[in-house]
Image 1 (cartoon, rainbow, N blue to C red):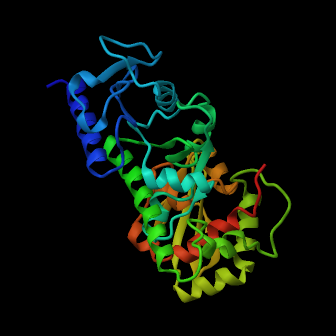
Image 2: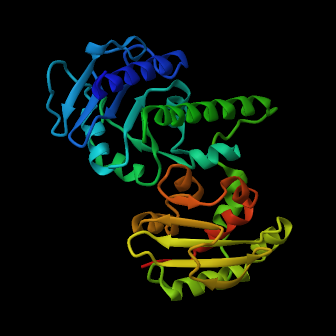
Length: 339
């Protein structure tokens, strides 16, 4: 069996899985997978994802031209632009999931409540849609640079991943988290639930350090690192969290393009020294664009790590026990503004 046929079967299998889990109905939704640098497979127009057959999957080149027979989904421009902008992406899943669609008709964004979902989903934002198919792809691409899943308001949701199953899991996780919010709201007596606003985190997320600087710094400059140390070590909340969790570790950050490394030694949450140790217990590596997104508070570093936008070397289970102080560190970092 050649690679194209294997990928067709995976598309068919994923369509059936989405159908069985109630994430697609009728003739809505579409799937695609990268075959190689020049071609993709995409589901055909008017097909039912729960009953796909081999002839329902169309081969396209990157110009959107059909190779062989078939008529591709009307969403092919969105799928193609995702593959062109994200070389690491191997699959795209687009659905009209019921709870997700319903939630985003009323809210612009969703922040999961459970810890694991926060790691995998982060804050999911929506983009306004005014047409039945996505005709303005640029806003979708912009948001996918910060998160691998985005809601299309009045339309659906799209997820990208290295493979079909991981894209499916993002779609499923978002739907289940929104269902959980609905259930939690039902347990509240005499109140109207405020779904997915993440208000329990707002004091931490928006809590500015009184020591924050208005100056802007060159990204990954020594001056920026010195200011980070000053703010972290001056923050009372950080010191309290560090002591409470006995946060003793070495954390290094690396700029992918330049190889620049800064390592921070933490003792009970306080930075006691800064070096260039690439053998630190934990090393976070990312390209310049992702680091800028982190410092501009456009993406959560934990989410960027689980979605492979950042690479974490080290034991994730071990660092997760310091989730609260690490979250505070990242929030403080964003107060050291970059040019």
